Length: 390
View 1: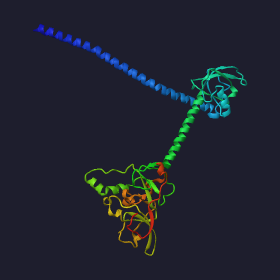
View 2 (view 1 turned 60 degrees about the vertical axis):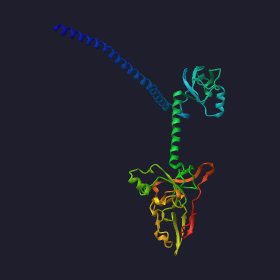
View 3 (view 1 turned 90 degrees about the horizontal axis):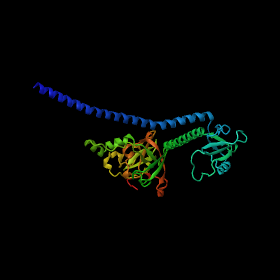
View 4 (view 1 turned 180 degrees about the vertical axis):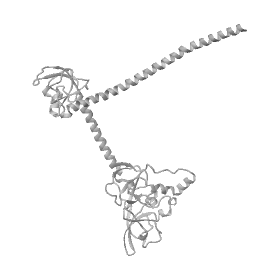
């Protein structure tokens, strides 16, 4: 038995050694492969970063050179110091002379390689040049290099100075355009009409030019504004809002949306709503009162909102009605859609505060058959209030 166990132990050890010996080279090879792949990845990353570093280093060097030698017409003319194998850029602002130089193969703004210098004397110095890179076919010549007197070209720039000046000029131009765009964006908006609430003056999908309000809006203006918090409150308190709350369903929010409505009343006006039509009290002589009425018409579902939305006072009382109208405070505007059948407006959520205003709609700019100033609203001046609708 001892011999049996001894043989078995030797056999097991041999098997283990064989397994370890087979596993070790495989593990070593896998480790080496991972190491090689990692090194290659690092080298590739370095190769990708190198051109970017070179670009920035070149630009930084060029800007430093240009700072020393100047920009534009104030840049140092290298005509008297350029050497063979230098790359230079000829410049000329005179159109007639530019054409004359172009006829001889000297194109302002193109980089040229100095092939030869005929004389070291500044007065009669001339150089043989050819483009430093291929040009378009119609600019190429068969007689490169061409010879030109240094004094025939008003300004010779070093390549670094020209590239730095071009980069700075491009950045300044881009900055100018971006500044103009930012200023225009803060004062002008192009707005697409989303609904029928302003028909017939504005049709759905009309494109409208809106300018930021500098002067306060006037009665009859169409204003562009952000939704006031009172609108969300009115929706939440409507029948739809209450039903949604009962079912734990979220009502569509007005956040991020913007609206177009017509100004019915401005600060100081005494405003009310009679049979769904907003009005402004103009004057009263005794019991005879004159009103400016905005004939918007009834909302499609008046039962959705509080009855007070459509009648701020009892419709049966036509005398001394001005005693119950509300006067708009400073910075408050009463706005309504021309098509009251489709408009939820100040009749429902009350005065619009100035802080929500962006600007005033000026013109319809698309489509072409609607192009022009926005049509006036459905206003009428009336003695007393009636239930008649236009």
